Length: 225
Length: 225
Image (cartoon, rainbow over all chains, first blue to last red; front, side, top):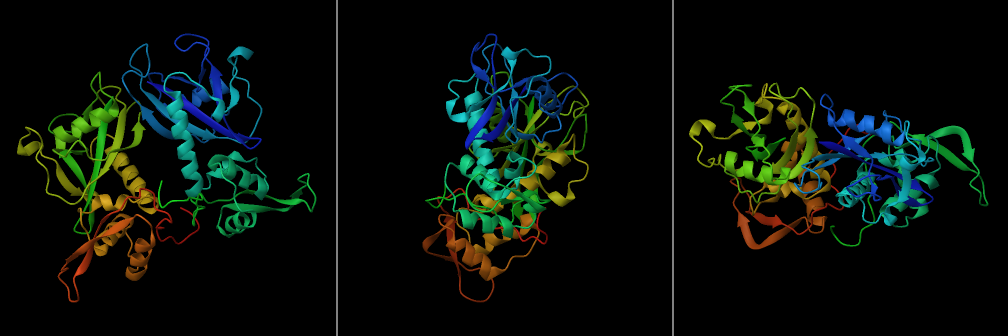
């Protein structure tokens, strides 16, 4: 049994995933999600936190969520390997240095649209992770996990626009976010110059809510997906 | 690796789960979710469909959904066993006869509130399944999976009320359901006498939608759960 980690961030308006370049066969030279084998006394959750630290240098305390388990008998050409996949969402940050890893092993942020032919069934895992995160943004407060501790409403809106791949109405978004109890909290007296004209933008941090009531629905054309 | 199946139905206004009485140790005599070991050439999905037919007699074509994978090292006293849990929602039906199983092995519908000290970590799996189904009812059309092929809006409302454990306003529910594109479709000319006074209730069947837009939100008191 292995774990695979789909760690996502929003960087420059583009969804990125943290990948490792594989050094050995199978799939030598291909991009792969960080991950590895579960040790005999570990749960999948414990192994995921360990691999996160070892392979990416990210804090093992990061919020990880089980995505799905992948168990097709032929998914690994070496032997039968079942993988429990996890997702994690992090603010934009430089590539962390892996524990004791040389530069060649270093995890890299790669735009998800540029991930071609990754190892194993990692293309499918990544597609499932994107879909899950897109839905979660509608019904949970998870979007703030992509933001730094203090953020503007414009930065929060950019997360939604990036993950959903669609532009959102600025005043409408602002009104909905501020009307949703516990989603964001104003940082008293704090504001940031956003580079453009006009007055500095107010800063917010994540509020205590975890579920979004009411939800922020993804714009849709038909009745269902 | 094993699979465990949380098969749920609504019977007489009470949420029920399909359980097997264990014949052997460990946990001899305790209730357990149907399930079993994954064979060498099977995916967890294939094993789940096979166990569904073998242990419960339900059609293997039933819609199954991965719930979560449970991998705590001590969850099975015999050895290290990782289990991939699935949920299935079915209309109320008599206990199906298991393939070749005697009556003692027969799966039984048990009210979820009466499941005391089930085998392994099945109490946790069942709790996770209830929570997942409660959320899914808000954002997907899954509630119709609990209904017979043709149902009244009262029957659909009873599914929501049972799973959420809360009474819903009848006219408001009706208005919302009928305003949600693709959720239900009227069966032309069909109606059912519901036993009470008044005119027969119109019959509906599941529509083509899978996602509920807009969602049917569970009544909540605070800003978040």
